[in-house]
Image 1 (tube, rainbow, N blue to C red):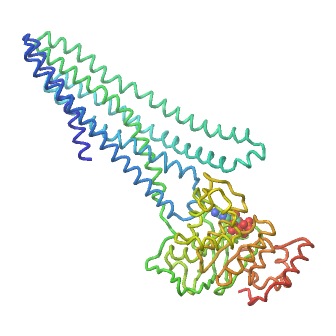
Image 2 (image 1 turned 135 degrees about the vertical axis):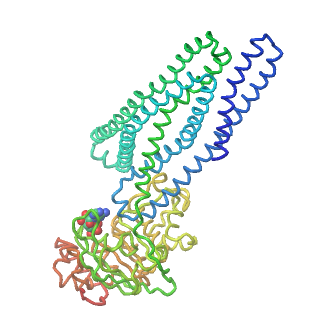
Image 3 (image 1 turned 60 degrees about the vertical axis):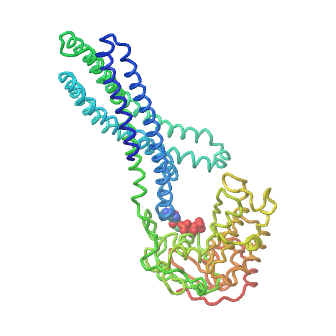
Length: 578
Ligand SMILES: Nc1ncnc2c1ncn2[C@@H]1O[C@H](COP(=O)(O)OP(=O)(O)OP(=O)(O)O)[C@@H](O)[C@H]1O
């Protein structure tokens, strides 16, 4: 910063001294017809010009370097902070709004810091120095130039106030537009399948028109004020030339002084003109900073408690217990979970069954603390999960969701999210369990890039990769949220067969919709109205709990199948619904 300001100061100083040299040239060699004297002045002007050029280079380089570093640092920090924020924050925020903050807003601040701030400081300093010089040269005209700062100040105040409001609206509407484009890109299949291209386009143009309208309003405001910034220094210049000429005629001023005066004043035209632009970018940067602070000001709530301990992977048995667990979403008007009591023994596989929307996904999300309970507690080996460090808890509890998200990385990197140090043999084993060996047939095998920027995989293929990602971490507790829903019956059977062996030593909580997946579980828990209303083996619940039958299957055919499965199932370890 210091180098930057010194370089900027020297550059401006050189540009101010040049008119003083011109004054000496006009009042010296030119007036006295002494061409020899011109050489020294010429050399001095050349040296000053070279100094100015060198300082401009130094200033631009240092300011660009500093502002680009700032941009990278803030972006890193913002991304890191967004990763720490709880799911309740991400549920509430549109992705486009986060995107526009991380990309556009930080860019706006960088542009202001790289040009705006420095020019603001330099231009104000230049204005003050030049005004002092002008007053010393000829005080009546110097005072006039000084007074021209008053209307400039008033204009700037009015401009800044109005520009700030419009600027915030423009940036917010750009965020909305980004969300819309992102959603449309994700949902392009649905749009095409329903033939709703025109409808979506109309909605898009409505969004885009709003951005356009607000941007035009901002531009209109800018163009209304910009001429005033041009007018004032040019008006002062005109007055200086006329009044100065009269002063020269009346011998109050030498011709050289008038030339220096006019040149110095002309040097002020750009700094004053640029004030409008600097203020506009300054207001935009302030709005951008405000928007970024909306995110920074949100405190991460799911964090390590003071004194949190690591889960000891070597000794943890994987006993999971829900004790009076309550949970409600911040925007929800009621608790989704209204007192859950459930015991899952080490190594046991518990299936969770309930009608759609009953809270199964919510319940399993609480184990790795994707959300924190709002009442009661969940324990792992008898200890509240909130007393463990988040990192170690999430390494102990692996999760595969129904919606399998793959990142734009290679298959290997996607799997490594589950366990970075997994060997090829361990990856192969996980892929076998998940029946995802198709990856070896991909063009570059495990190194094939998948996800949005890579090869498209089918829903079932993605689900199997997500399952392999969860399995490869060899977790003590495995949470599977309907992970086989997109598989055909044969593949599902193969996955289940392999998964059953993995589950033998792992505590597992499975959300299931299909009776066939229930076969994996030792016991089943039925979730109704925010509570666990029955726990037992599949056959027991089938025989004794009518609502269980109703949830799993409504048709007579399926009932027959269910009875068939029930016969093949091992006996459970208890029926008690707590
Ligand atoms: N992020 C959220 N914010 C607010 N409410 C939510 C959120 N996620 C889910 N809900 C609400 O919580 C309730 C339970 O949802 P959840 O996804 O846990 O049900 P589910 O039993 O897993 O459903 P499904 O079987 O359809 O997957 C629903 O009423 C749902 O609308």
